Length: 363
Ligand SMILES: C=C1C[C@]23C[C@@]1(O)CC[C@H]2[C@@]12CCC[C@@](C)(C(=O)O1)[C@H]2[C@@H]3C(=O)O
Ligand SMILES: O=C(O)CCC(=O)C(=O)O
Ligand SMILES: [Fe+2]
Image: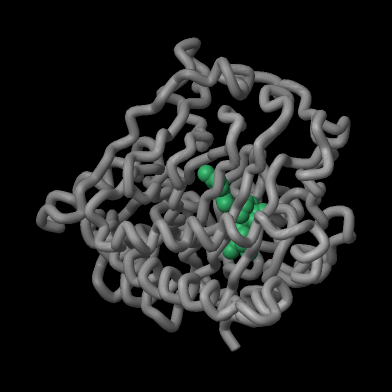
């Protein structure tokens, strides 16, 4: 099955239990040494974390109720510059966003012992645990997550043996609507960037793509300036559609920020009812680096819990991707920046060399 292949790709490396099990956040009232992050070197010093990260980046807010010709053009511009935009009037009813947020809070409010019943297996993808890339760092992040690839039922049953259906209904409905939205956005962005129709169909058709849902919680933190909500990373997706709830915390790194010329971090403050859309590595690759894969992180700025829900729109594991502009699509004669790579190989390379994966496929 398609979803099995992608989860195998993500589960190529078997994790140790301590790399999966999150802290029982209710059990501590000071920040444990295991969760203290040193200030990062270089340009990342700019706007490091809570308190001093006042810069807010003016990423475009795009209204999806206007004709697609103009919204598509704005999306292309946003993908070329920030790699991020926020979408309003996207057609997902606000009650559905509220229901997903409520179910997410209900899940993370469970006692640690109950959440551990639904722990992700050492080489699995689904279930409760630290963010997958936690194993790459010496320090732990101040978050816990729940991943859904396919049906959430098996893990939800372990969380609420007698009462899991409500969770599944909300999550499945959300996943379906967001998948449709993600596919529409990707089609529109590629079309607006003059990608030939057959190329768009080949890489984004229902049989060539799938989704993973990631529920994140950042519990109230006793020492937010020394902790890390989520470490800097880019997403392994075509597009990620993120519902940020109402609490700020997401930052992106941009060479347009920071003042000193080296770039810097700035907030992407959520607009009411909006969905934050970011370009992932795989759209960056097929666009031949025209679209910017957004490096982002989460800082802890407020004393209250923050939740977010990410929908990763991804090609299936056996899809072979290469810059479309070099294969007869888009700009003829363009220099091809990346070699062809299957999604499975890309994921393997990324989790071996998180920061260097794009150079590993650079021609
Ligand atoms: C489809 C996926 C992308 C992701 C790994 C996953 O299987 C599900 C969770 C995603 C996430 C969310 C937090 C950051 C990240 C790097 C991680 O560790 O898990 C991303 C993964 C990714 O984009 O590679
Ligand atoms: O919580 C957020 O705002 C971002 C989460 C994120 O980057 C992710 O799940 O990949
Ligand atoms: Fe992310």
